[in-house]
Image (cartoon, rainbow, N blue to C red; front, side, top):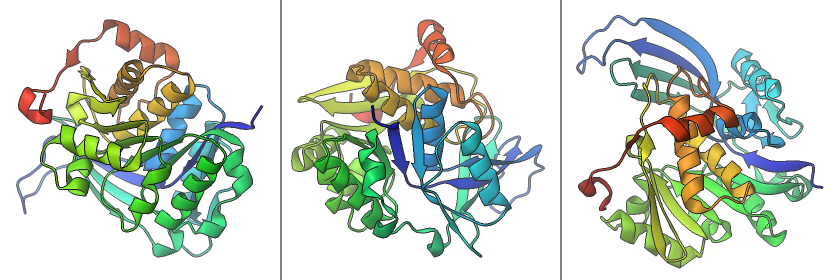
Length: 313
């Protein structure tokens, strides 16, 4: 048996969340009602979701040797995640995000900063760590490092999932090693220049040969293409408090579905449900739920489908 079900390589951040009754007009003022410092970050939060679902998880990333870095590591450690390959950069601040949350809608606006010294290098990627997992999950940052990891995984027959939200220079070298591409709603059209999301996903999948090419649609769910067919999964309706981290938790749940051998529709439904539950509390990991709670939401909750013009359905 391999030591880990999943290895995640990519971003972490420690967030300062500020809740306002509603977002003020540009250059306006607003009294905030709550302030909270909590850990987040794309891959780190996805790995927390995986651990919450009972998977054996290793996280590979970099933090600074400051209080925010210690908070991040403590959070990951509390969830039982292996941190033996995490790099602590001396004299360097951990990635920080300041997040404004509109209490009336739960939507957030993010301001972030990442010191260049936090970048992962190809030398930071241990082939043994990649080979010791059943699945590799990466993001689009530090392209050379995640590209090396993806190639090692491909050589070892280990499937690769990726979370990418914007275009990164050189990422075309990573995509041929990706099995499951789940992007932001904007990425497929930006990457291909296609205005239609169906054509954009089809073009990416045909060019790079991944099993699944999909995108998250926020409050409208997720859309993916596999075996020449599209699958659309509507979002679950919950009392949304904060959308911070919803996409990250979606990806962690998607990884769980892949490892459990779920079909694509069930995987998307499951990931949508777990992401929705995370939106019921403040913070990137505020509402991370276990398997029982996710299944309960899937059994009882209503769903919000996208309108035809929103995804071309």
